Image 1 (cartoon, rainbow, N blue to C red):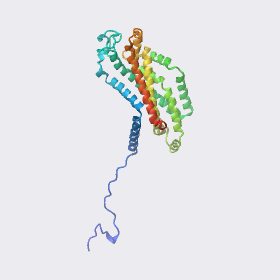
Image 2 (image 1 turned 60 degrees about the vertical axis):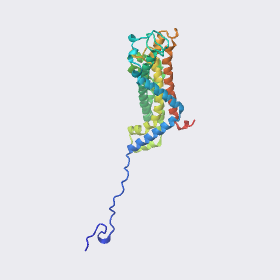
Image 3 (image 1 turned 90 degrees about the vertical axis):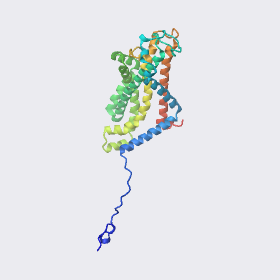
Image 4 (image 1 turned 90 degrees about the horizontal axis):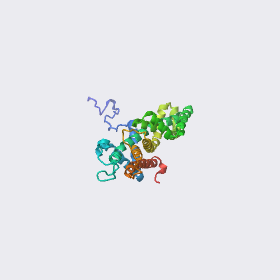
Length: 322
């Protein structure tokens, strides 16, 4: 009698298939799927943004100024900002040696403009971060929790909206002292109410949607609802609003520096305008001392405005194709 084999089991019963199944592709984790979807959404947004010529022009201008600020030490030595090392004549007009002329101390206006971009852009970005963080936290908390939380936070927001910006900023800057950190803090702490109002309105709209009620019924807590449902829906609005806040922050820094409340040890576009006004550059016809910082401020604010307009068309499908 022959021994039974695997192919012919005892009793003639059909045997199980012992062949190895082909390897299946590994399933992606929910986090990996979420990351892939975010990358696809970002790629689609960038593709839509590139179609907007105004947005691309604004982005090119902004990249130019950011590169000028980052590579300022390579473009112009910092020693040219030192008054004791100035080599030009006071209020010298533009020439081959000084393309944008000189200031009252004989320093190159071109060097001052390049190095001033570092302070103006840095203060603008820092102030925007402070403003957006405070405004987003207040707006999301007010829109999500509602009731007495909403009433309390909105009354504080209304108080900041009623007080004029410039007097409050001048008082805070005078009390805290002239420094870059203090100026950024003053601008950020006085410019967040608008963001809070916008974010609150969006958070209220998201909180009233049915899937929020279903998630709450399934046991989701406030932290889960805010981080997983409300925040992702308000982030595009926050991002678009941030671009416009940067422009306002740069103008605010220029205003405070022009009033003599900036850091006296650092050169900014606002401090250049303040020095030109104090030294009477307009009365003696030294236009080259006033025009470069003014044009730089104008171009940066215009660039952020154009980028914000393009982002609005990207984030709002109703505006596409117009």
